[in-house]
Length: 219
Length: 219
Image 1: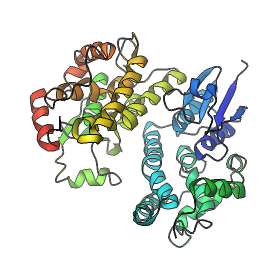
Image 2: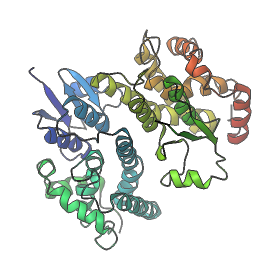
Image 3: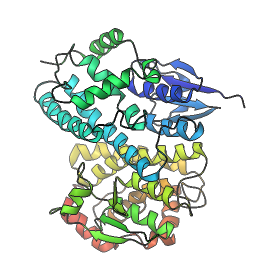
Image 4: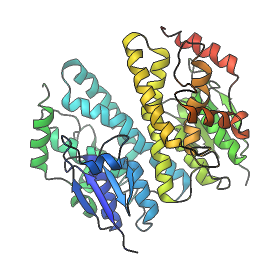
């Protein structure tokens, strides 16, 4: 069957990059369409009328939004190289941690990076707690998924690349070798994994674009 | 195999009731343990150390938290009477709408009910928009899941029972027959469904408990 797979994304977004990683793990060919969020395309608005956000995957004309929902769809549609574990209990744990990253870690990390003053201080404290929780969960595993990249690793891509690329240039000392040795080891394995390496944005361009957009946080 | 299924919940919580509905759809016998949120049990803290929240399902000693994660686990573990659809695309849509309810509808509905002044006004406007989106999604189907109750219906249980039970006593006119005829028809079918009917809290006790806890909102 001739597959038509299109991804509407933004190059600097960890959420569209999550979907690209999943597609690359599966070896699915796709057409990538870069969106301009200041001038969203009629197609994006048609395909994701509820949130009007990227990423959107369109598979044989059927649109799907929300990065974790898309990854589960990809995993159920192309079954080789599984992204979620096979056993229901392990699947539940993977979903639990992906949700923890989205709902707890990412807001705290984002505010640690770009908010100011007391709000920033509070966010840093909270982000440290959440990173500690993730450090414990990772333990001595190579990846959150075990020996191979899984849903939680992909969900954590902001930590594995965005955070560590940006923290130094914006004067933030959050994820360090001393405080989080296991996460640092994970990051090293993560960014050197083939499917990840070819799905990450250029570091310099990322630092420039996000710093310009969200401004340097107060030090 | 002798199954041991325990649910840690709170009787007035739509989130623990979601899990009870799923267990009843599957006909799974379970032991229910009522938690006191002002004095959480050591077992709850042990089983959900990250969020320290109900509901928690413990299946043969393995704890799972987060109601939608639990429902997916139940659906994958006891495969008869499916809660999620079979096709990956339909599954993705169900997950999308469950997420929309949790992340968009519930916060707006909650603030429409219990916040005050301008915050409440804004929340009511937002909640109306979200209910309109759900009304459109429901269309002429009996349930969000089609002919049978599915993940989205269970996720929407707050709308199907909590909101409609509480709105009048607290002086809120949000989900009315005139504005949302399809949702009202759905609610009628929903609360009369066998698995739902026996999983809902007593209405009078619910109104009394939530009004006492969160206070009457300003009219």
